[in-house]
Image (cartoon, rainbow, N blue to C red):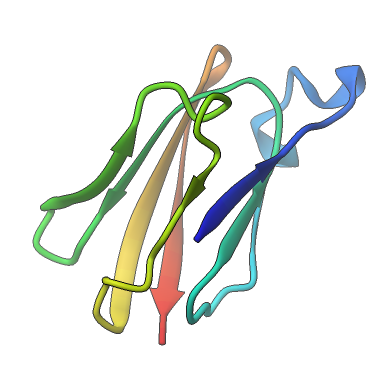
Length: 89
């Protein structure tokens, strides 16, 4: 499951204030950050395994169905794109 937490106004303008935890994860990954407009998770082959164009409306997803491995999480905000490696055990 991925949960997006709300943040303060001071955090809105910085991609560096986005954090993902725990990492590695088993069932739940939390994303803390502001102004997140789109989330895309890719597997090792580049296949999209999750995509959400409006994460604030649906801020939780299950990752129980994903196999153990390394995934890329693309986090898009109005200030740019951040890509983070997520390890699922």
